[in-house]
Length: 399
Image 1: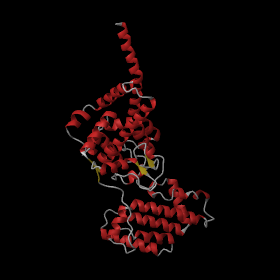
Image 2: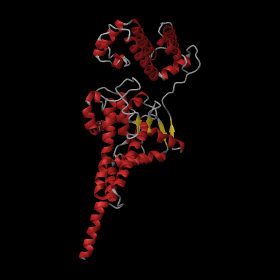
Image 3: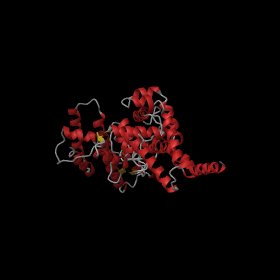
Image 4: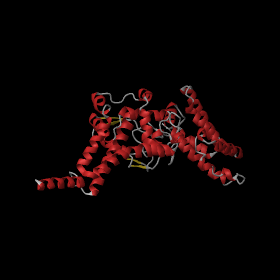
């Protein structure tokens, strides 16, 4: 009796130390990295690109797998996540943005990202206004939404059963993965620090050019520029692992891509027509990024000849490419001073304003916009500035 009792106790201690699988520490680490990566993939592909932005459609097999996995590893409800994210885009960098570091502060979003999410998820007005089109079937009502916390409880039981006491740590890492990487890093750092390919209307930034650890979400400025795109990498040196998975699923008939970033198509040089106008408007962010690069290069060349340029204006290259509406008061003052100091630079900046106005006038007819484009190209090519002329000639090749 005692021997059997001790034997049973020894078995319990052995299970507590090693779990059912008896895996080594490095095998458990690999497992943890694998399951957290699947969770990241589920968030970026299913919740973000498919549900929130409708950038792709998923086969029911994949949709149900992702829904079940997210219930098991995060407890997040699809409607809540999609609604909060859509509101973030609609109200970006305003007091109504659920998690803007520009408004709430970077430390708040980094340290309290999950808390901000829960607070907004409790806002029924947000769910009603922005949560449309998400799963509304029997299993959603009777399991995923109704028993949202039971999934992560089941995950705890599975982890402890498989790995023993260390399973608690595995489970804790799984529970912290999304609050830290998505709610904290992407929502926080993604609107605070990094590089920008495009000067879109918010403070979004690309954290890294290689989106692997957080499923491609690191390319946050690209995403905010082309929010409905299933692909987040835009430059040749950028990598979006989420897009790789989408391509693999697409090849297997498990996903259908609906939209990707527009790619500039250049035809032979010709007078601008309606097709040119439509292509320019579709590629306006890429065009303005190119114009900003041209403007900064022009400024750098002019500085060599502007000996009287005040020292406090010589840093203008760092902010000259930004949209004027997002310049600080100090930068706006410097810009006016810079314009007054050089007629050619003033011409470059005025032409940028006029180019932006072409797609900024929503009440103008297509014919009126085309006339404005013709006028812009003519003035650019007759300006006497080679940078403007070359830019206009390229602009007229968009098709």
